[in-house]
Amino acid sequence: MTSPLRPGKGGLLLSVRATPKSSRDEVTGLYRDASGAVSLAVKVTAAPDKGRANRAVIETVAAWAGVPKSRLSLASGETERQKVLLLEGQSTRLEERVAELTNGNGNSHGEDH
Image 1: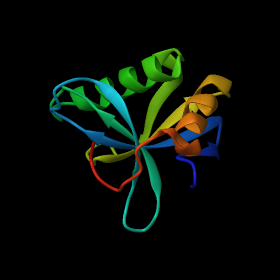
Image 2: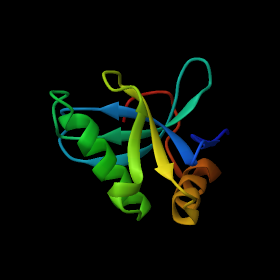
Image 3: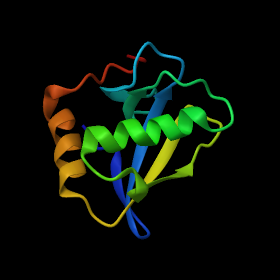
Image 4: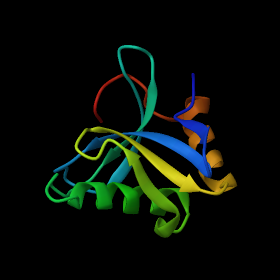
């Protein structure tokens, strides 16, 4: 399985599949689209209104990965469900959390979780 992480300018890029207006804020595993691209599946309670869901995605991923939310920013996908977050610098903890999912501990059935 490929990883949703890749090197980017100034840090790591993380592909995210966001599901707004969910019952709770959580990382649910991995999402694989029809082309085989893998993203981190993130559910948030916020509605996609005036950037609320984007901020909630950043906060949820930061808490899950154990990194300060100030190091995460939205690189692309402001109005899309498919987003790319930039983590400034390196983060062994984020890489470890993603590796846990890509090593068979995450859901990767190509569906929203």
